[in-house]
Image 1 (cartoon, rainbow, N blue to C red):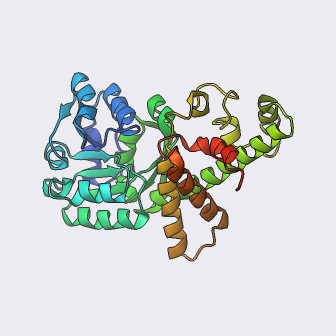
Image 2 (cartoon, helix red, strand yellow; image 1 turned 180 degrees about the horizontal axis):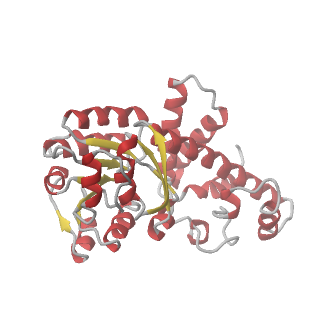
Image 3 (cartoon, rainbow, N blue to C red; image 1 turned 30 degrees about the vertical axis):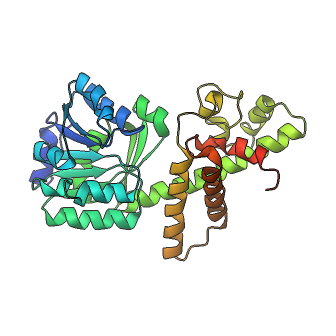
Length: 316
């Protein structure tokens, strides 16, 4: 995918280099299938993960595996990072063996982690000082969409660099949306996840109430999904075991999007709400519910396990 003229020479040359190596840092639940989709599209991948065992599979697929983020930066001028939290992102970019130790001028660094928008802005400044370009590009869609290559990417950064970023991101997603300056991708993501948490709790409460009123859960889900209460949590990711196949609720809430990560994202939303003096009463309540779930043994279960949690918490 080349650039449509007119465009900056750096962007054009980067886009035309298409199948040059791409660095990928963070090969966890999301990063693993994302990096595999880059390989499927013919990109040589230079990989790093803090857990060496996560890299072995990629060695078998022909990827180069390195010892540090700095080594990735030395070998690739396009790097994607997919990390669990703001501290992890700060360490990978600015740490003793971080990307910025060996980043090349003109490199394109795309962070698909979900982190505090203010951290994205600080990383962008640090990257810019090294003569490179930083874009935040968090994702929506979860592990299933990562495997299928149909994630949604919400991209923040310099608009003239968007095409160069999109060339890579479209290999891993079906929607790549430009949101504005650095940090706006993160803003879109945390707003989406706050709504997702609220709607999942609402769906869980509704299904639980209906079941206790004698309704068959599959029938109730069918009615909700043809009525005004329909939402993604009810029609695509239903939290009640036995209602849908192929979702975490059908597999003892294994896989999917972890409760710990949802609690983290809701915490980011709370910080942003405080900073902007925005009232988010339902977002705050959702945050507390997911924090309680983490404290009561649900940390590693999918966030839809809120259905199970609410059934057990009669006192709520």
